[in-house]
Image (cartoon, rainbow, N blue to C red):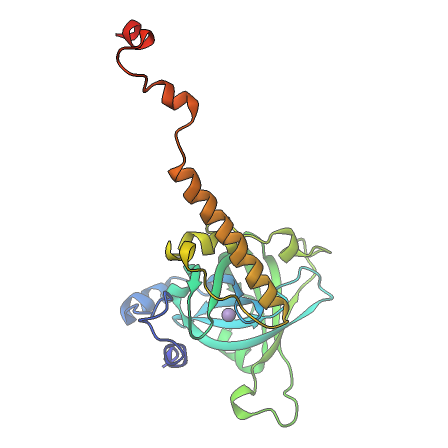
Length: 264
Ligand code: MN
């Protein structure tokens, strides 16, 4: 069962992530409809900021964690560590994972469709050389995932999991840092703090959660994100409870005033 590892790592009473309850029939129908299918990249601010590339195949989303994110420069080889398959429904997920595995904030950074440039996807995955085309908002054109050789002494569980994500030179490649140029969500159009502010229970106003500790950049980034989100929530709260502006209060002039009389 491809989703066993995904489910084993999560407590669905505690995480907003989808459990993946799609029926076999619905899945088969979707699979038959096309070769390739949906793809997404989720920007994930967890213990380390990374980008999760997911390609629909065989009813699930094949997944790779790309620490530096995709690059449009063909000379860049971005490390991509294959992770557990995710349910198809995960592909539209954006939100806060409050605790447990992957705790942090997930942003839907890009999505669209993908198509293999090979005859047989399974054979290409087995061989460790998958060439494919992406048609997303930010990522387009021809790409490759190439498995690297395991270092000696790699534990069995981690073997055959290390790949490189490479952009082929084409119309869509170039010396552009796409993660810098287009950092926001394609779903909400917001940044991490907006997702946090949207998801965050009002309780956070009174009882701000403990910030991440440590010296890592993700830790300070998280602290910064929490501060920004808290400020946005406070501002939202203040504007909602603020006294109505002068223009509005004028309309509420007592009935005895001259203006109110002339209007009648
Ligand atoms: Mn992740």
